[in-house]
Image (cartoon, rainbow, N blue to C red; front, side):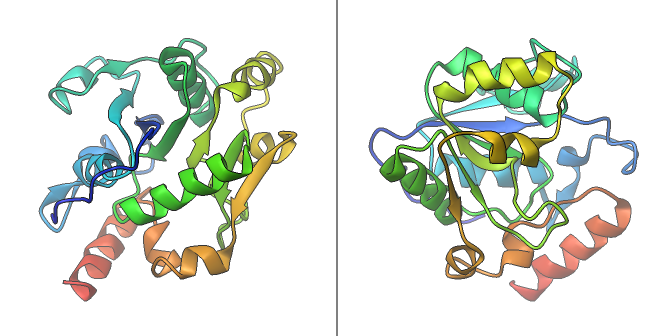
Length: 211
């Protein structure tokens, strides 16, 4: 993989969300390889170009060995899916975070820097990219500020685990529009996620197209 550009000054912490049971995939999906490189390494590489340091959030007991040199923590309020991971990251970091689900092999440093710049400039609590997914946004490829911690705790306590609904409920949230994302690359590629073996085959095809 190409070396990422240096992160901006005062960059947030980059968080890899390695959650989910991978039931549709059959094994930890972030450890699968696309074009010879593990997806988790591809995500880490993108984050290194946008964040000051990395953090892995995972409940798997083996997670500490997945990315040598990167601290690994578990959810402190499990049961809320990706929101539990965002909560754990914010509680641990105490500063803004850029979170990326570990099944997104083509996310780029440029996209992540744009998310942080929009969030920081707007003084927003969060910034998510708009997408063509059923949710309309990608809440687990996003920036979150420490102000989100209390609303996260309330949502998790109430059993509300929907990432998109949570992001939209925040009083100050910014967005990267579809046009903004398109200016940084093909949105269908940048925001592609691997959830099934068929998705992995598609990711290999996408990687070959850009080789």
